[in-house]
Image (cartoon, rainbow, N blue to C red; front, side):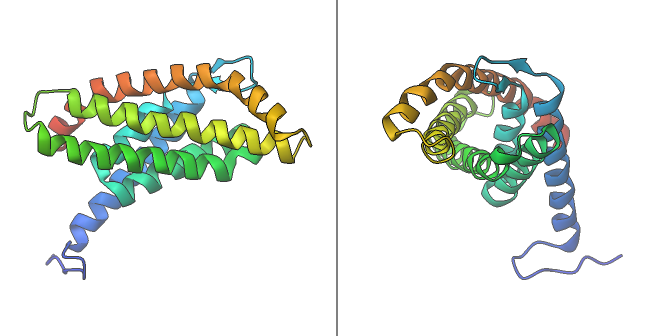
Length: 188
């Protein structure tokens, strides 16, 4: 079968491969978020799904990676019954993957070594900072609007989620740092 060329310069085969990998990363993100859950005092949970969120951005690039991370994470919230979080999770996790990808590309230009884990670690830290800040702001918004509290009270209450989200972010960076070299070797 002859490959047709699409307008963006990718062949149908390359686009199909990217779509399959993006679907796989969305599924891994969803399952990684749902399978292992460590409950937190804030009625949330810590999970390894953030490692797959970061890997989505690093392996697939800004557009496909963001979509895979956002869709996989939002599906996990939807299936898990966290309905009110679905839109916020989609946006926050997509931005986590996007920012992680952008920082990774920048760091790879500065640090050209293939074996140096610094670009993955630094991009993961910045990406996960987006996640922590995103959920913090969303919690303030939710508490102030849905629960009818003041913004100050929402701010104070939302701080309870900072430590669990930071811990989750650290696990995400560790998972991405360990799996990225393995997945890049497999994909070649």
